[in-house]
Image: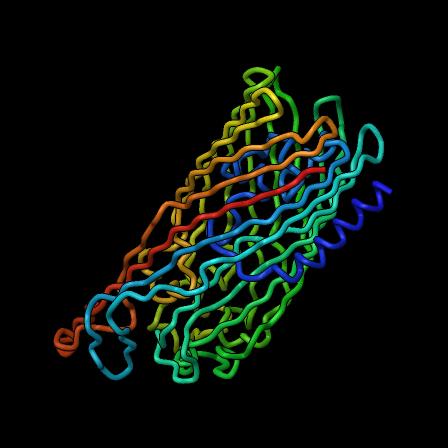
Amino acid sequence: MKKNFRFAILLLFVIVGNGLFQKTLATDGYFGLGYGALNKGLAGAGTAWYKNSLINGNPAGNVFLGRQYNLGVGLFNPNREYTVVGSPSGMPGTMGLTPGTVTSDSKLFAIPNLGANWMLNEKSSLSATLFGNGGMNTNYPTQTFYDQSSKTTGINLAQMFIGLTYSRKIAEKHSIGVTVLAAYQYFEAKGIASFGQMSSAPTKLSGNGTDNAYGVGLKVGYMGQLATGLTLGVSYQPKTNMSKFKNYAGLFAEQGDFDIPSNLSVGLAYQINENWAVMADYKKIYYSGVASVSNPMVPSAFATAPLGSDKGAGFGWKDISVYKFGSEYNLPKGWTLRAGYSHCDEPVPTTETMFNILAPGVVQDHITAGFSKALGKSGNAVHVAFVYALQASVKGNNPMDFDAAKAALGQMVPNQTIELKMNQYELEVAFTF
């Protein structure tokens, strides 16, 4: 009866989760800061900490979890805006933007995740998880780029993964793991049809509704104790090749291709005593491996490299390094406290603010806190995590508008500045049973 109840709860959550899964927000670029309440309470640190490995953590850690079921829901509150300073020149062939500050609508999202781990024997386990990635979303209540076919401007990219993980001990305190990931993503763009003259396929640029893409990827990991209390963890996820967004083949480079970048995480965890552990992670995300994300906008090249072509403009994002630090402390009566801090490089260069009005993933610093409370001695527990992404901004010139007087003298001097701003709050609640 107890097993049937657990299965029914998980099945119900999958159904509800698919209904709730919608627009997700930028953190480490557009990857999640962490996955699951335990990991988020540590600011995403824990590649070497098996306790938070279940939800898209290091697949090598699952074999140490024992049988476990986990479900959670995160609530996101993003605040995104752009500010244009300087009047448009009005010169033919330019795209000057209306001066002022515009704030994106759509300020609250619910994102579920779930996971289950079963021990096959004393040395191996099998896990199944469902979770969402970062993503990009904006919904500006204005015609930012003067597209008369839409009253609003923005994009919506969301990604969902189903993971199957096999984890195995190769020694008493050393393990390896591999996750097979089934990836699904959807995308929609509106309010950017005015870029049609710069596109290789103007009818597949904007306002074509929601398009879908699918792919299969892998994630591998190792975890092992180097010395008493000191554990090393490493995980790597190669680039996931996705099917193309055919309805947006005139927007994304390589005819609508939008693959998921590769990433590498290396971490150390040190258990100071039986109640206190600290951890530090280094993560590298290789956005440069995906042309639609990393190709820069060069207006002078639109004639030979229009939007949607192999070298067409993307968001100009750079590879980033991410540094994560976390601490976990056990208190009497089943309480555990967590805190963390994360800092990442700025993925958006100052030269790329024009297109990144659509995807202002500019936050760099996160402060987190969380706790768990055991519910009796059965292994059941409730977990809570709170994340604050400090406000960050990037300011650059509008590369598609120039000072008219100086242009007449042959001097192409930018006429406007664009500043992108973003901060974010997040609350996640999860249950282990």
